[in-house]
Image 1 (cartoon, rainbow, N blue to C red):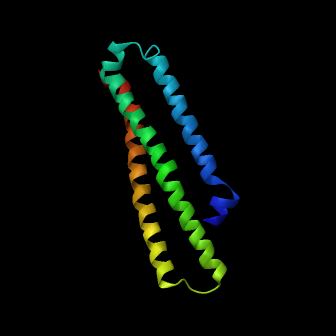
Image 2: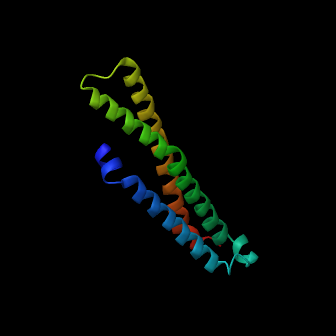
Length: 129
């Protein structure tokens, strides 16, 4: 985790990729909706489904940036402190690590579900009248 998170800077790359993806989606939605002015298209099943997918994508990006990333950073820091100590973790450290890992597992699952729903909405939107 330290190698991925601190040395390779994966979280930064993932956040940049997420932001670029959301911005690209907003650009496509803007273009398809005539600059957000075509109310008929926005109210159609296609427009609403794309909108639902967009909201889910933005929420999952925010979940990752605001909640998951800081929690992962705390877990990595705690893991580094445990490793630097050269001995088994204290009961408090072990309990905290377990709590952080459980939180990351739950949030990761929530984020994955949101992204699957986002992808499904984007895939079927054009077929909804």
